[in-house]
Each structure stands twice: as structure tokens, then as C-alpha cells.
Amino acid sequence: MTDRDMSDRLLKLNAALDGELDAMASLAFERELRDDRALAAEYRRLVALRDAVRHHAPREAAPQALADRIAALAPPPQAAAPTATVVPLRRRAWLDRRALALAASFAVLGFAVGAGLTALRTPSGSSEVAQRLVSDFARAEIAGQPFDVASSDRHTVKPWLADRTTVSASIVDLAPEGFPLVGGRVAIVDRVPAPTLVYRHNEHVVAVTELPLGAENARAAGAIETIDGYHVARWADANLAYVAVSDMDEKTLGEFVEAFRRGGGPATEPARP
Amino acid sequence: MPPLLDDAYTLAKWLSQSPTDAEDIVQDAALRALQALSRVTVDRPKPWFLAIVRNAAMTFMARNRRKTVAYAGDMADLDALDLRQGDDDAAPNPEQALIAMQDGERLRQAIASLPSPFLETLVMRDVNGLSYREIAEATEAPVGTVMSRLARARASLAKTLRAEP
Image (cartoon, rainbow over all chains, first blue to last red; front, side):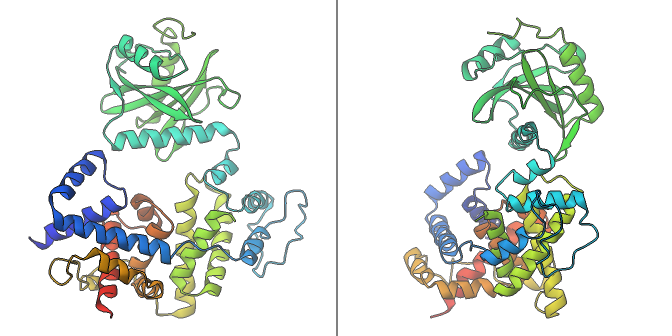
């Protein structure tokens, strides 16, 4: 075995251990593990090591004093006056009012879990939805599997989605506009399955997720945002809210959205149950 | 206790090998983060904040200790580390390895003595639970480098633990 094979083997073992193999590679790896006892033994050693590291070098709780000092970096929003100058660090000019407000929420949230920070900057819940859909989109792209049902026929896609979601999807035929339907998948938003249509344009893909018209989803069409390098457009009609995520450029996505909205509306039946 | 702060503190403590320095580092990182928050939108707080902690640790170490954190990306002198584990020297005896791992103090020492690029990668992965991609982002290294650092870190830990009585 050459050095190169050797290190590839080791990298693969580690990637498998860390859950970083994609589905196909995992499958192949599981087979290898079954057939190759030396590999399996090596893998068990790695698992033992990883478990030992986790056990003996766990995440430690930050000292309360540190948490307090960080919380004190900014005064609570109510007491806007800078009373909390216990901090043994220089106050800086940049700590203007806005930064202070942010800092306050930052501290109050105590470096809160997950999307806490995102929420700081974009208080509407809908942005979290967009963020989640972008992750979804990226994952699907990376996996090379942008849809769960592959069909350019909306009469195939619609019943497939209808079986799996509670939102009745409006499916627009945009092939004449250069955006043929390629399939559909289900996105999970707030633990509810939401139909997602996947259209293609040249080598690019756009995924439109249709959501019930909740308060946080009801957003007029605005500018196209960029999240993690993907473009995101949001709009709503009388029945549904839509989030389109795409790797297309902003202009093309704008055209797509326009075509989708105009697209005779739903080209099948009106999207109401 | 907010988990992100714990993650930050733990990472800083491993990088600085000192609880008090870790507090200073995290506090400095928090200031930097607050400053940055007024300019940027943060999509994934954890890797974002840990990257700031890591950079704060680098700055802190460079300022206060001169030497210890000397290199961050130079792989040349790291190649001396034997990537291969197992095949010849170690009898594939997982139970034995497992028993050796029971000794937490020795394991912690072995982790602490890893060169910092390996240390930070290992801690971000196994303690902070970041993905390869997130570690790559936080350490400004390509994913391939992250993978090989992690493999080497683990191989080196296993070797250290085997070598000692």
C-alpha cells in the first residue's frame, strides 16, 4: 500500500467517524467494514479514541463571573445609560447606541442558542425560514439530489407532493420561459412538511417552497436577499407564501419570480383544497 | 448556561492552556463579536463566534507568550508525524486501546501537547462539534487540510497513548 492510499484510508476512516461521508460513500464504507477486518479494527480504535476524548475532554461550563462580565458589556435595553462599566476593558468609541442595543440583546440572549444571533439582525421569523431553506438547498445541491421526485410533469409532481404535505402546491409551467420543472421535494419548515418545486435554468436550479400564509410568512415581494451565497426571493399571494432559493444570479432569479407570479398564477387548478 | 459561551471558553482554554487566559480571550472575543455584529449578519453563530475566539486566542498568545503559538499553517514540519497507525506496531487490540484511554489525565496531556493547528482542529471537532466545513471556515484552512490535521491529531494521540506505559 502506498503512502497515498494509506492516508486516503485514514482520511476516510476519520470522515466516516465524523459523519462526513455522503450517503453513497457511507454505504460503500459499511461494506468495506464488513469485509475488511483490519479496517474494522482500526475503526473501532478510532471510535474508542473519539469517545475517550469526548469523555475526558468535555465542553466545560464557562465560569459564571465570565458570563456576568460579558453580559455587562452592555447595559440592559431598559437602562440605556452606560451604568455597567464594571468591565475591566476600555469602552470603545464604536460602542454607539446601535451597537449597544445589539450588544444588549447579545448579552441578554447570552450568546443564545442557534439562530439567536440571526434573529438579532433580522427580527422577523421569516428570515430563519429562509436560512433553513437555504441550508436545505445547499444540502440538496451538494448531495447532487435536488429533488425527491424527478418529473417535468406537474401532474406527477403535484399528487406526489399532495401525498406528503398539507399545503396544496401551486405548480406553474414555466418551460416556455426557460425554466422547466424538474421535480419536487419536501422541505421541513417549523416541523411541517412544505412542498418544494425544483426548476432548472441552464445548469442552475431554483427551488420554490410554498408555505401557509402565516403572519411571519406574509411578506410582500421585496428585494432579493443573499444568504450564504445563494439568492433568495420571497413573495406571497392571496393563498400562500413563497420562498425561492437559487444559485442563479439575481437578475435571472428576478425574472423567474416574475414569470412564476405572472405564470397565469397556478397553471393547474387554483391551489386551494 | 448558554452553550455557545461554554464552547468558546472550552476552546480558549485548550488553546491557551490556562483558565484565566481563557477568560480574557473569550471576553476579548465577545467585544470583537459585538463590534462585528453591528456590521454583519451572522448566519451560523457557532462557527462564526468560535473563529473569533480562535483569532483572539492567537492574538493573545502572540502578545503575551511570544513563542508557543508559532505556526498555524505550515505543514512541512508536521510531516514528520507518522500518519500510519496500526498496521505494524500496534496489535489491533481495541480493548487494550480502550483501557489505555481510561486514563483521562494522560489523554488530556496528550491533547494539550498537540501542535496548535492539530489541537484547534481536534477541539473544534470533538469538543465543539463543528463540521469539517465549519472548521475550515473558522481556521481559514481548506477542508482537505482540516481532514488531514484531524487524522494526524488522532493518530498522534493514539500513538502517544500507546507509547507510554
